[in-house]
Image (cartoon, rainbow over all chains, first blue to last red):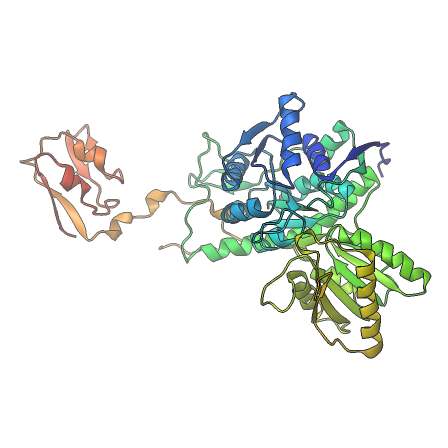
Length: 410
Length: 92
């Protein structure tokens, strides 16, 4: 086992932490368009480019649709490619997100999660990325600036892995993480570069009968992103699903390997838990809210209440088995959704957690809380009230309302 | 498609073509085919330039124009552009 590095502490907000990790990731091409609360990422990165601190081609595009198109094209040549976006910008990329994953281009993107219009709102919730859950991108949601920093390196290793070859979104909560200064332990440039390594490229059989690297190369021409008619399209979608399944394993492997290097680990990479082992009542959430939940759990534990947390780190691929196992002995579960699935009887995370538990021998009682939309602050007292509800559910063995709103004026 | 179709495990990733486009005979699509009147044709080669499928070639050895009906989709652009009206479109 490698000795854990002595690391330097820097004061970075989430966006700066992303930019700093990107600087250390030996990126060939960045194509981006600014949007709050992501702007600092590309602003900071363009400074690195201007100062000659990185050897990266930086493209300012006319829109996010173009930014993702440029990233896809750059990635298709074999270049390591990165971008960042949020909210309406991510929504404008929608079409290209599917093309990128369909072309199996491992573009890495930081998403400073923000609400979608209308009404116009620049603050943090998960509406933007959850709306892209079926775009074929791996999605990882982070809890703090340190995890954002660490996850960028991991994203390259996961997305570019030969068994995966998929684009990866790293989510950081808008403003709560993107604009909040935190202490971040950083790797040295050399160690970071060694960890991310060089981009892995699989081989393909071309129409000339040659087996070559899957990248645009004038010496070995190939047709990339062709039309696939009803007799073949389906097969390529099935390949993407297999890559997602493989990613479940690779995310854990990369998390373990990074832990050896840095001393930091995020559960098994897929889910991160806090005081879950003996917990009767559990909150499930994504992102920075987990920090608040942990504080509340500590308070409840002093009162002898067995509260716990399950933070879903990888939302795509969705770790159904890990979640079902972790919640096997739990009595009551509250799933928190920071986005809405209008008319869907609960949020997207709730749907999937509930789905994951369907085949379990023991079903915990489960309830959904929609919270924090448009950057509405989520206080410890609100989390306490959720745990209070869970205790009542545990006692009465009854869920009166499946979907509730927390922090909403009734 | 005459050959056995591949399973998702056998197919190239992301739909990279394992066959050249020339194996796909798009000439099957046509309703009308171009017929050239060699008496009227001045071999000006305008048709070879306008053909959107590159299906009309000038064969240097034969010193003549050849229309490859395997790839001609029958669009009729050649007949429209021919300065001497040497190409007519007939039922394929």
